Amino acid sequence: RKEVEQDPGPFNVPEGATVAFNCTYSNSASQSFFWYRQDCRKEPKLLMSVYSSGNEDGRFTAQLNRASQYISLLIRDSKLSDSATYLCVVNGGSGNTGKLIFGQGTTLQVKP
Amino acid sequence: NAGVTQTPKFQVLKTGQSMTLQCAQDMNHEYMSWYRQDPGMGLRLIHYSVGAGITDQGEVPNGYNVSRSTTEDFPLRLLSAAPSQTSVYFCASFSQGDTGELFFGEGSRLTVL
Image (cartoon, rainbow over all chains, first blue to last red; front, side, top):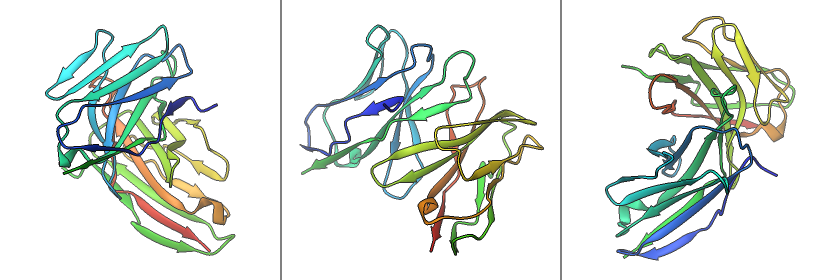
């Protein structure tokens, strides 16, 4: 089983839709969680960190459920420019903060 | 600021050849990592380093060697290339003192024939 798992999609949604991505992780000692965005053939870029209490950045909301070892990303009012692959990233725990593991990514295609 | 610089951007090798992918960062980050990305597989961690002189294995270390003699440099060596190592390789660095945001190089596309 991979340490970090995501539904690869693709998710095809119309502009304006709300879409949610899920991610599960297997290491209960993990302490840091992130969502990254990757455009085709480009390097990944940080979208947002995920905090225990949940956090929001404009149209994007991230949630963490430590008990279920589950992270989510909600995108409201989808734009064409949101089309990309979204990657869940988890660290290896308190003794392994330098080890950041990626999920396989979820592809989002927003259509007009 | 140059950030994270990877070279070469493209490379074609024959099976059995060796090569080194170079990675340098000028942000004084403690942590550096190498990932490979294959279609449908996301990024998989090859090796990582938490500081000069310290390296550790990631998810897919076999066939690759690394060293970290300085804070700035983290080269990845393929000792005997195999077609299974055809991939896009990304080097990344981050500072634990910040948000933990990974800064990536632009990637190196390697083809092994």
